[in-house]
Amino acid sequence: MSTASSPARRTSRDHASGVEPALVVEDVHKSFGKVRAVDGVSFTVGRGEIVALLGPNGAGKTTTLDMVLDLSRPDAGSISVFGGNPRKAIDDGRLSALLQSGGLLREYTVYEIVAMVSGMLTASRPIGEILERTNLTEIAKRQIGKCSGGEQQRVRFALALLSNPEFIILDEPTAGMDVNARRHFWEAMHAEAEGGTTIIFATHYLAEAEAFAPRTIIMNRGKIVADGGTAQIRHNFGTQHIKLTFDTQENLSAASAHMARRATVSRSADTLSISGPDTVALVREVIAFPGISSISITDQSLEEAFEQLTDVGDEAAVSPKES
Ligand SMILES: Nc1ncnc2c1ncn2[C@@H]1O[C@H](COP(=O)(O)OP(=O)(O)OP(=O)(O)O)[C@@H](O)[C@H]1O
Image (cartoon, rainbow, N blue to C red):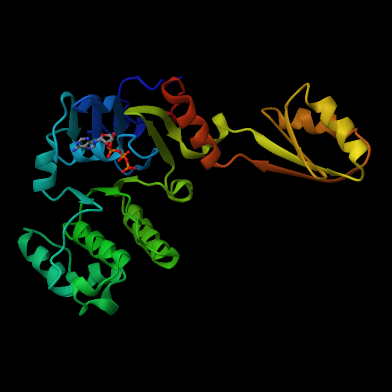
């Protein structure tokens, strides 16, 4: 069982291959005045891993990613990328980032800005391929100033891909994108990931973590409160919900009174909701009650697990995925 303060882990794949992990963050601290933005954070990301970094506003996600990107320095602790200094990985084009706030020159066209940055790199992927990958070909002649927030975010994504990085960090990459743009974006990310790129992304969209990241790290108040397989986090903290409808209020009341002794129950109109860890046992018990008209069982969503984790603060932790 790993706890929030356990040391950084190396994945079995990295152990086996003897290569350095993409990222090792060890006991990193960073304060702004009295605010402990990052308070003893440790985690390791193996090569080719895709990790979602979740947490409420002010949890310390951006501060952590900024330090990985050498935009600021830890007060204490260490960060290494591919076994070395993050700055070297950036300079070598191995680590790249898509940040929300990265400024773009508004008077240039999409093509011009991508071509300009491409020209500054010692090795760049072909501009046409990048525009295609990021769904920018059709708006290549549009001025940046006339692009929507979501389109500008796609331009930042294109710039991040130009150096053909092995490791990409994305801070809320789909902020400002509509549903369609988000879908295109994740399709493009999937294509990158299939090539073995290591990806860490901070997001507020839990659905994105569930859909895209096999591993999720949840931060709250500067600490890691959960680090594990995304499905496992949901499972470990999850209970299942059983919803029952009854033919009469009397039957509903009888079932409710009985089940309240074993599980968490709530009722509304003709529906009784029951949640607890051992759903199978609960269903066996509840099925004996007369007057049931329908039964449905649903898994707790990651969103609920997330709320539970960030409510309980520093104490919670889940087992990590296999290491
Ligand atoms: N430059 C700064 N000066 C002072 N305080 C800062 C600075 N940067 C971050 N903080 C504070 O550090 C804490 C962590 O902020 P951070 O931006 O890392 O959180 P976050 O998880 O990325 O939040 P969000 O999801 O809102 O972007 C917050 O309390 C924030 O106000």
